[in-house]
Length: 197
Length: 197
Image (cartoon, rainbow over all chains, first blue to last red):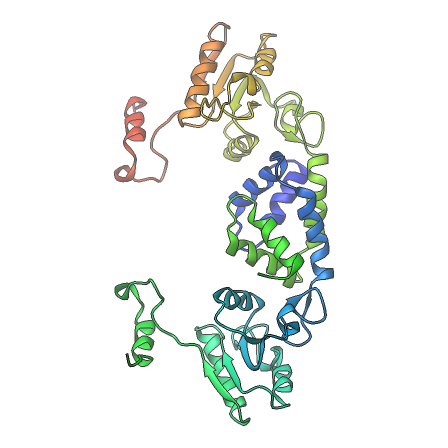
């Protein structure tokens, strides 16, 4: 619809997740017309990101060094590993400031439909980390959906051969939510996981 | 929350219109992890857009040449000018394939609150285009909101001194919409603008 580069930029933005054609157009014109937006900075960052950002050789989290800032931090509790699907989950858990152990990023979840099996995930690396006996507990923090539950079940069976405590994040009612609007599976889980007061 | 460049990229995307922190994170990880996304292309386009894209010296539409593809097209009806606020409006009207005349992009609308008066818009350029008598009709296609209406009113008064037909796009019920859910102003306009069948 537009000439040349404007349309090209709209098309490229439209290929990013969650950006439809209208949003892409709005973004392209913002970049074109808003002097306060530092376009060269975004361009430079995009040029660098794939070269500079690596995955931590220990846990698989994003980092610009060999090991991520969490694995490098000696104050973290090395007896506790929280297994997550994605580096985004590490950031989400870090925001809670509840967890002071280490992480292990699987790089996805088991999904027969998508053709993703245990061999496509960082499962071998996890087993290697657990081999020296330092780790006392593995918290399975995969998503509470079909793929995440399947992955947690698979890992818990695998880990039961080792002398390690294996736990799973609690499912239940979201804090601030309304019982009335909770789906039946979540409400069922909240009953199952009820605690004595 | 993330180390270095990943967080920088998330922050930059978060500064674009319509992209919140969660979307920005999702986009940054997509760029990092999806091999199918051509990050160098986006980076190059961003580096070029402000240098290469100009505004048509006649109508103010975006172009990479002195004059935009519409102003250069001899098949367009040069007796008809459609006045819009923004280059995005040109694209929206072009998509309808209803209009075969030329455009004039004002670069905004009169807004006393935002401190935008007629002198901040391309009004003088419009008057210059109308001076040679070629144009027979000016269609005022500013937005049907407070600022757009004020701009249309201002322009129609200004243009009434010339021997040119001045029209305004119809306001009324959106096609496919539901009368029940129309706001009262729109419904009122639909009555005002009713047509004999």
